[in-house]
Image (tube, rainbow, N blue to C red; front, side, top):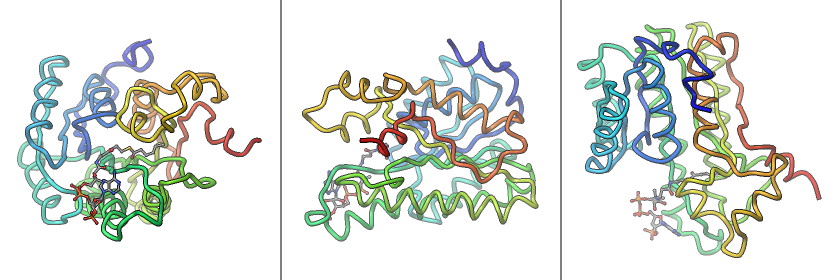
Length: 263
Ligand code: HXC
């Protein structure tokens, strides 16, 4: 069912969303869902050509206002500039989605020092940099933050020490920001996608000898996720439907994390 048939299509009317990683994959879906429900959006990533194409697609398909800004979340100066451009164009920031991430499979013994640091810098430090740069505007708008996480660190996941450590840190930041920014009426939550079948991450991170059908059979809900599943969670967390929810990390994983506890 389309997200518009579940949520009223004006629930984010007048809101401005600032989405890192918004040009592709899950975060593109999150952006499109917010646009379809009345928001305007700024999408951020390093490669402007790809990003601009995604923005143009969204403008055409949804007819909403989308601004593409090339910036690297690892560089505070880039993100501060992107926030300034957003304020010049739209005047406000109501919803921040920290989605920019990097990941690949590598054993610790072969992972280079720089590779480990790179993923920590994109996922964790990028979340800090962007949140801090957006804070004055979120304070003004009594906004919301959604940090995209993963369930890798609930137990342990082979060959993803870098992403595990980064996302554990992101979850800690989610709770810290929720605690400190609650008095400003800024809500901060996480969303944790399980295996989402249509993504680059799913293709890159699934074991090579295991099919999508095998993964589906192992899931308590007997299927892998769709980007649409994360769109529903985004609309809940970005809208007043979750107005008393802060500091939570919403698992949208078809029960995948439960399975990791079972034999
Ligand atoms: C081992 C790797 C590597 C790989 C990069 N590195 N890819 N090491 N295996 N596959 C190493 C490089 O050799 C280098 O170290 C260091 O990481 C930095 O790489 P660069 O390419 O120079 O950096 P950069 O251009 O900044 O890009 C880094 C990156 C990118 C963002 C990590 O390589 C990448 O993976 N992009 C894909 C983005 C992606 O997959 N997004 C989906 C995420 S899915 P040396 O020492 O050689 O210089 C996700 C889901 C979470 O996050 C889990 C859900 C359940």
